[in-house]
Length: 394
Ligand SMILES: Cc1cc2nc3c(=O)[nH]c(=O)nc-3n(C[C@H](O)[C@H](O)[C@H](O)COP(=O)(O)O)c2cc1C
Image 1 (cartoon, rainbow, N blue to C red):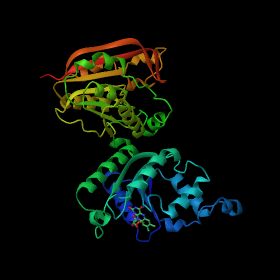
Image 2: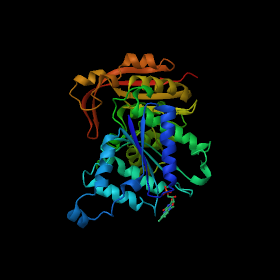
Image 3: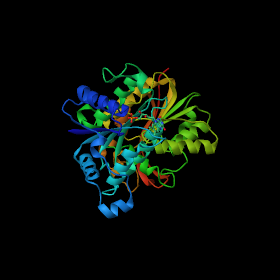
Image 4: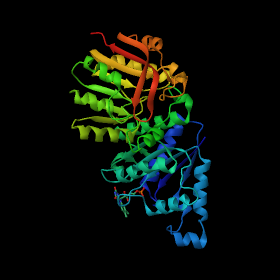
């Protein structure tokens, strides 16, 4: 497996180059020993400032074609973005613009770990935001990102490594996420479920994909949640989270999709309620200990190993007397006329499995239903679902 790493900077003493080298070397040393690293210096691919007239006159510079090919022959990318006036450096922007004339999807579907650093307190956050927002549109599968502020304080130049502490720990976290994507054996589970780019795309559509009203089962049993904080996992565009906030709960909405949660925050503002949003992968998210009065998981279809881990964590994350509310498409959904749910049996949940895997709860209701669903564009018609209401014993 080949990993292409570079700083989006042409500085000979680039701090982003130091950071990206450190990240790539740690990845290989600690997580992917068989990975081959290719450290690119943008100075080796110098191009003139992009201009349409130059392109018409002379075509695409060989260095830009080389850049495009290097991305194409890599299995994954680590890029550390230097920030100039809130945006990309001119050197990177020109190289990128030229390469985009070969194909706008410059990143060619490669998994990307995006970093940034600067001498100041914002750590190149502005450019990182630009880069991570744009990445999926230009063909990158963005896996994780990290900005490191105050580079000169936080990085030990002699060792070529981040000093121990918060930023080194954060780097460990994103490297693990990245390695898990690249090496299936490092995953707690394989992931046939669609990733963040697909969800971000879906939630970028003009209308809420699953509507703005709560799920019927949530509405039917929400009154069973005692007063207190509620966690909505796989919260999407926040329809259930906002509904529960309207009922007076302090609600945390977590989801893989940044775009989904941005829409959730807008919906909360529109309805005049507060909402905490957390963009996270369920595989990494800490549910906490005796923290929640309610945990709500609606259509959170994940592979069995992850599902079992989340169920086990949910039992301890609920306060005694706290309530789990879950609805999932059932395996029978594969043969109903209804639209909705992943077309993969492994991701669907039957009542017997739910009951067994949630053994730590007092199960008040666990049933497979056939019901007509109308949630936005994607959940429609007569469908087969599994519904669970469980309580953590006092
Ligand atoms: C023209 C120019 C503009 C800059 N603008 C910003 C900025 O907007 N934000 C920031 O945090 N740092 C800014 N800096 C400081 C850079 O973050 C700093 O030079 C850093 O070392 C760049 O990363 P590099 O060493 O990897 O090239 C700027 C530097 C230059 C030369």
